[in-house]
Image 1: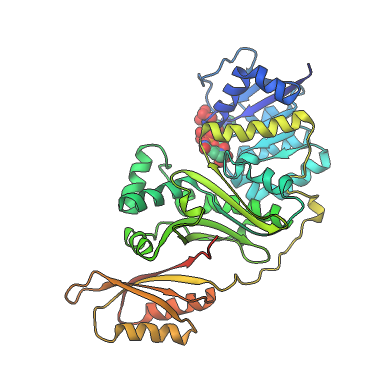
Image 2: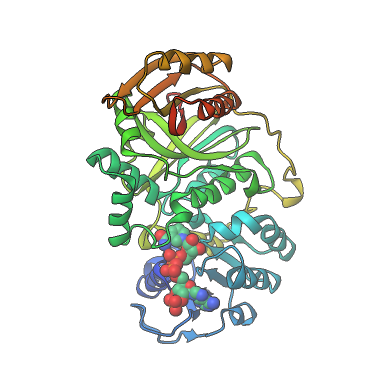
Length: 425
Ligand SMILES: NC(=O)c1ccc[n+]([C@@H]2O[C@H](COP(=O)([O-])OP(=O)(O)OC[C@H]3O[C@@H](n4cnc5c(N)ncnc54)[C@H](OP(=O)(O)O)[C@@H]3O)[C@@H](O)[C@H]2O)c1
């Protein structure tokens, strides 16, 4: 049986699991791949026990050397980081004619186009299924399974940490800070959580999916990003009263600016039921209509599953353009029209005075925004109270301008939160 020689750079959560499966499940993988997957070299910062037998495997202190090793067919990059060692390694591996498999969404979101071009020039494969939604075959589904479709919208719960935090807040009524601290203690959230809770990780994934869905060069800087730090238990409670849950959604509509932001999602919708650390990706287009896929978006096993599927594809001789088509044919600039009007949730603190409600609705009316419903909570003598409004369909710019006017009003205390209400899916 033929052999495919693999080098893995990075032996952390994902890398050590991939190495463990390659070494322990050799027979099963060989029968799937049609050739033996041989782990020949690994690299990490330190050479210690990682839970798999190092027999016959070289440890290389300098990851860059993996790209130059003659016997290596595939370099699997599992170090992470948009630049630095990971990018240098992938670049030089491709230039040296090696296939590259990576789970690195930050690197692909920032340098995917350059790396894909390099892969094309060298006639090798660049694969990154694990970079988006972990165990869900989100890229393969879009790029291969839905290749005959004109995709109109990609929506996803793309960050398990945020979904876990929002789910806990919804189910227990606890605050963001409290749930985040617990998630960090349990290892579900990083000690430095900004990449996750500020929406950057989800934006990396959305940028990759949008590029594939719409045949565009990847454009991370275009993604509008808002994370979940501003979501309070008050919002979770108001949303529930209105029949919604709050989810951090990535949303890329054909021709419109892609965005990651917390949204109100109807309690009986499919996405509302994706709880805890699960991810979900929904594609709609023609002729398929709508496809929703859900599963574990991170973790050693789910991510290793996606990395190994990419390796097996290469062994089987399956080739695909990383972004679904040759880089030269990807569009440079998309038609960045404004997102279609939609309904909004507005939460503010107002002084508890006569006439304030009229003043708020007057400001909204001045911006062509009509109010659909109004809720007020926490009435106490002379102290500011929470006021929540939902609007009829309105333009995003109008909401932003109205929020600016409201912030300047004397009867508003504290900041104003505006969240889109997703149309039912
Ligand atoms: N964890 C997940 O659930 C998940 C899910 C999807 C995608 N990903 C992506 O998968 C990649 C790896 O994530 P991870 O969670 O496995 O990270 P991790 O646990 O932090 O592991 C990173 C590994 O890289 C090694 N490393 C760091 N700098 C290095 C260098 N200069 N040379 C060689 N090795 C170096 C580290 O070595 P030491 O162990 O010696 O420190 C460690 O083994 C990232 O791109 C991440 O975004 C992760």
